[in-house]
Amino acid sequence: MKKSKQIAFCSMFAALSIVLMFLGSVIWGFTYVAPIFCSLIIMIICNTVSKKNAFITYFAVSIISAFFLPDKECALTYAFFFGYYVIIRGNIEKVKPKLLSIIVKYIIYNAGIIASQLLLIYAFGIPLDNPWGKWGIIILIGLANFVFFVYEFMMKRMIVLYNVKYKSRVERMLK
Image 1: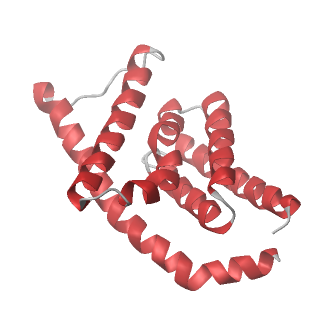
Image 2 (image 1 turned 120 degrees about the vertical axis):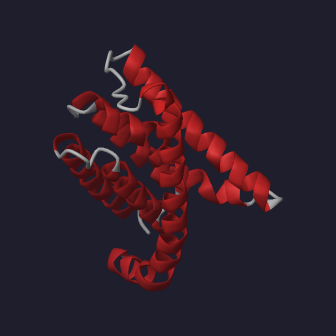
């Protein structure tokens, strides 16, 4: 694929990611769904073009989202985990034994989500809404890890679906 087509492809998907992130900022409840959808877009770039272009697109979307989106939680959730995770996921899965690979994934996820929440609380002054009292943080972390479990389950299937059904179509369109 020519460089110009790669740039156009990545730019088009970066614009789509920004639109999804904006929708995540203005539609209640879509704050956490938008970064997940954007990670699927990064997966497509990574599998179709290259990891290098996927990282460049991730950085561009992260910076634009951080500066221009009204909801910083959506932007930081993407920037601190969902944007880059799909790119490094293949390398993490090569770690043997499988249990160590799973532990590394959960450590990276929890570190990213906790770091983004701490930045929201201490840098942006956004209070943590905690309706469950002193157990609220533990419950939220547990729920977040369940979401990651479902995300990981979904991502495996989406990668296979894309590679089997859609990758050849996308590559044909880009030739």
